[in-house]
Image 1: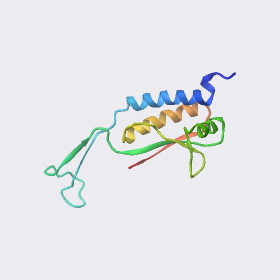
Image 2: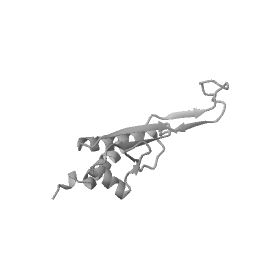
Image 3: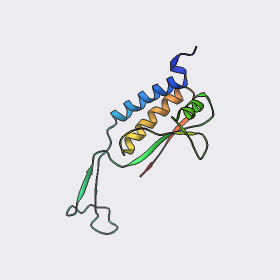
Image 4: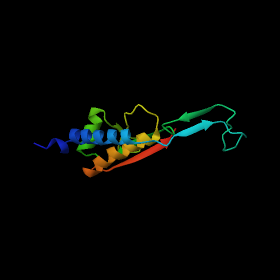
Length: 128
């Protein structure tokens, strides 16, 4: 019988623990959003409404898994991962935030656990 830490479910549990800890300890760079003083300006006109966004820029991050190993098969069957249009599988963070920095922290930690177990994984992200 395999040690639980080397089963797909055990690897996923460890990855989730590490990912949630990374997301929780992440301190995003805040941003101020407002209107520029000229149509194409890069300044903020403080006479118009401005908004402080504590969690910084919004975006998405995800983990891509290559290959068709036991973990990928388990993740697909259990709904942890979904097939990617470009091949392999994708795992999205289940975070209640729009912060790209928190999502990237989550995804990087999750992917690292997979790589530590010999699973080819990488992180991708985009601003929203």
